[in-house]
Image (tube, rainbow, N blue to C red):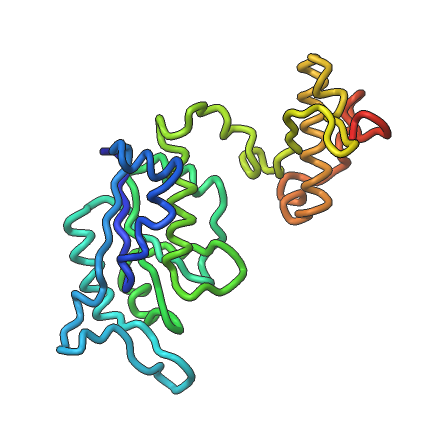
Length: 247
């Protein structure tokens, strides 16, 4: 077993959830990766199994306690040494494909799923925890974000995808969004597959795909386009949008 994931959560029943289906689920059943959950409440010290308390300084909501989370985390890291500890939080660094690839190439991860208003800052100050975010929006907790992270990692594990090379041209792998895809039938509702994709000319097809990826990235994600290097959109012969068959 090369990749292991341990999820610290108040809701263990949410797992494996979607990770039990499709590529991730098949890989889990085949033993290509392992998943376990840790119930945070099991490490609470009072009879009510309290994991949160009111925020210092006042304010709405509740804050997850550092002492309870540290007890759960420490017990897990002792049992699974060497795994990076991640916390899914809105203020974390944006999760991007290079980080996904690095995690997938490693031994796995311990993932802390926050709830309520957040986690006592002292936990982050006292433990080596990498905060990650899956987007600029708020979820009810970190569990759904953890599923997103693990799905992105597991599909890159050896033997999970039938054709490993299929991941190489996906969105974000080259810094660009992915080019458009087509399949049969050749004509649908008066729309045809671009002629260049039917030409059999692999050089023209590659040029067309790159140009389309650049056009889509520049128009839909200017932030990605800027990180990619900006500049003029390439338009090699036969690779630009044309009236007629090419769109």
